[in-house]
Amino acid sequence: MRIGLLTEGGYPYVSGEAGLWCDRLVRGLEQHEFDVYALSRTEREEAEGWVPLPPQVGRVRTAPLWETADDGTVYGRRARRRFAECYGELATALCTTAPGDPAGSSETLAEEQSALEADRFASALYGLAELARDEGGLPAALHSETAVRALERACRAPGAHRSAREARVPDLLTVAARLERALRPLSLDWYEDDDLGSVDLCHATSGGTAALPGLLARHFCDVPLLVTEYGVRLRAHYLTEPDASPAIRSLLASFHGRLAAETYRRAAVITPGNTHARRWQERCGADRAKLRTVHPGMDAAPFAEAGESPECADPRTLVWVGRVEPAKDLVSLLHAFAEIRRAEPAARLRIVGSPFGPEGAAYLAHCKGLAAQLFPDEADGPHAVGRNPVSFEETGGPELPSRADAYASGALVVLSSVVEGFPSGLVEAMFCGRATVSTDVGAVVEAIGGTGLVVPPRNPRALAEACVALLRDPERRERLGAAARARALELFTVEQNITAFHGIYLEILSRTPVRRVVLDDTGAPLPFAVPAEAHVPGRWSDPTARIAARGGPSPSLSPGSGTVRSGPGWATDGPVRATAPVSATEGAAR
Image 1 (tube, rainbow, N blue to C red):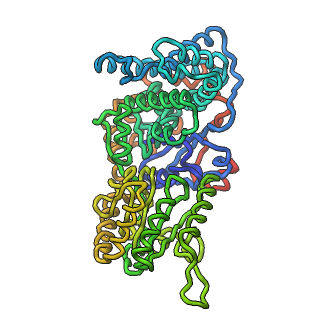
Image 2 (spheres, rainbow, N blue to C red; image 1 turned 120 degrees about the vertical axis):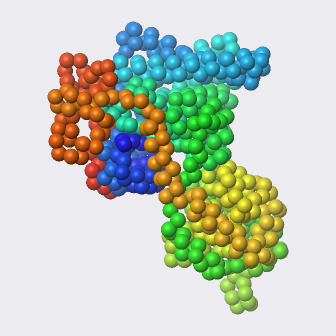
Image 3 (cartoon, helix red, strand yellow; image 1 turned 90 degrees about the vertical axis):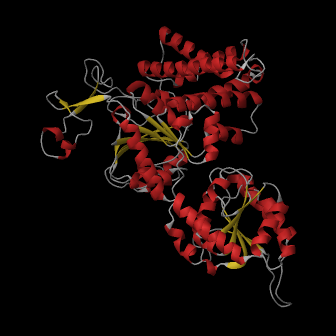
């Protein structure tokens, strides 16, 4: 089958967040063809290029979300009226009192109002998409004063929730700019019968903006949609917008919530990566019958040596491995280690990781200062040089060449986070056969099951007591480590992830009606979209065979001209063939 893989800030870019998972999926399903449709988030991401692509990637189309978009499209009076109506409906759906607010007089009334607003949002969204298809794009209109005034009217209208009514002009300008960026996929020329309309299935690797092309492919071409989420966009919005005004936070949260609900309603299947994400999806309106939990697949091979030799670990060393940032709460870990040292004076702590951004660098400096204050340098004798029992290190050096070496250096792995999605670092420790002590956040309990100890977050005393208990009981540590490795190998490997998605692809296609016919050069229909005869010399394999939607010719052809309609200037002009692996350097050059 032919899969349209939809990404945002991920595959095929080298620095993509979900790039490694997508690359493993594509390479593992080599019997299928993949077309990649990628939205890039930053200029740096595009400059660093692509990962090497396997032969089953047929084409890659990209569009940036980071640069200012203005395609120069000027609307006539009728198009401006259409835009004002659709955008006004969208804004009204974002500002209307949400279900559960005091304005709702009963549960039934709240449900009816929620369904009405969901339909209003969907109608407005697809109305904007149809306008973009007819007129050539939306960027100029979404940047216009008309959009800001429509937002203002919706915020001042009766029935708008309180935080929307409090929005000021700077808030409205910010929200309009954010909506313009989020809605850029509506202006792309990807939704024709020879583009996303020609795939058998759209697989969105995240919700939010990445899923928009899949929604439009379903709307225009009836292509079924599969949505995979390891982190829910609405949850991420609440975590990453702490300094915005209440009006901005409320309006953007309403947009992400409405878009998530529409995505879940239209998707054929939704695959959360863990129960934590699944609960958020259900809260946003996902139908339980569509949900299939598929844990992320990780490569166990690099950790095999450490997992098969647990006796090599230093029984007195605790290890923390991850990305240094405030959400990891290393301050609580250092205070917990102070109590651990009082109970076990020979204990040592290795903090392995690099900071993330300027905030992470400042946090790392703060933690180093705290460690120097809590743990003065110690020396083994009067003529020896002292050293701190807490060390801050990074992988890649001669002492810790890899993350597997970091986990292998200690008998106990600690996670102290206050916010966590799926704890991939814990799974790596489990592959290494290490016992773990973790805080109860995100999907931690789901990942480790009963193979590690779990304590409340921001509780240094509980964290210290759990660590001391395992440091003093090597047999228990060994049992937990062995159980953790067995659990990880059963649930979290690349193989189980690929097998699960292969089955889901087949399940969706088995329930999907025929959407199109394939015609040969004489205009006669071929029996299947990609017939088995295509691999046998004959008329079925003729390269002039074309796909036609049922009911008429491809809308990608301008009437009477036979030429493909051009898309917006800020998107890639045409498909990029990738029949051979592309290096990061070559990708950047493109």
